[in-house]
Image (cartoon, rainbow, N blue to C red; front, side, top):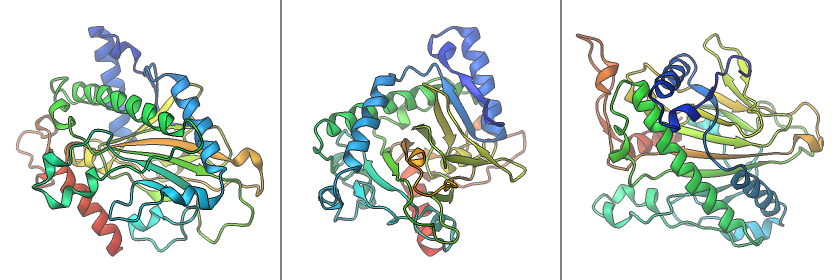
Length: 328
């Protein structure tokens, strides 16, 4: 347990033991209801896959800006390729006028090409847009693809756990994610060379839009914080080999607000020019199939209770969130 962030070993569920499955699902249900954040172990994601991504990632971000900019997107699909420091700000998704975030990023979308399956939905084009995968320094492309695939498998496992926690069949989510449009993000938080602007954070306060997020992070000062139900900010510090999982707005909607999508941020370190504050996070934002229906899960309705939200597609949900943030 880190602060009040539950730490859960999901290994017994993945091992297939009925008693282990029940116990893990109960722990996950409690965490999802109370704070929407958990730190997991026993997940089966190889440590060397994360370590290789961290090593190759730091090497990529250490390159000159003009080299990194070769992989900056020029089309409509913004969550592809490289984005420089302080060019994006997540507080804007909550309608806040705050300075841009103190990080630079690499984004990767779906590796499997499902564009043809959604050719009849023009709005889906950017969700399945081609990737911009850097090939410099050597090995960065292989590292990105390997960790995307590893997260992809783990996200499917987590949704099996979620289904059991929601008293649904274990494979409930499986047909809704076989053409997902999930996003991998590799964020680099450099040590600061000058004071941040008033209100500027490494990542501004926000909730995630999708179904769930998986995160690996290097240890450093100025890290991830989640807001507890009483409004205080809790440090989220995974131990060696552990990963952070949090719910997104889509899962809160799916569960009729039974489970919570929690506000979180990445804090600014206290000491400027502190090499120990250099940080990298590697996140995976699970977005189901573009046309997957996000409608209230039956077990999340009490007798006589009505859903709080109308059904919507996963693509429509994400698009509405993005449009709302642009109006904010």
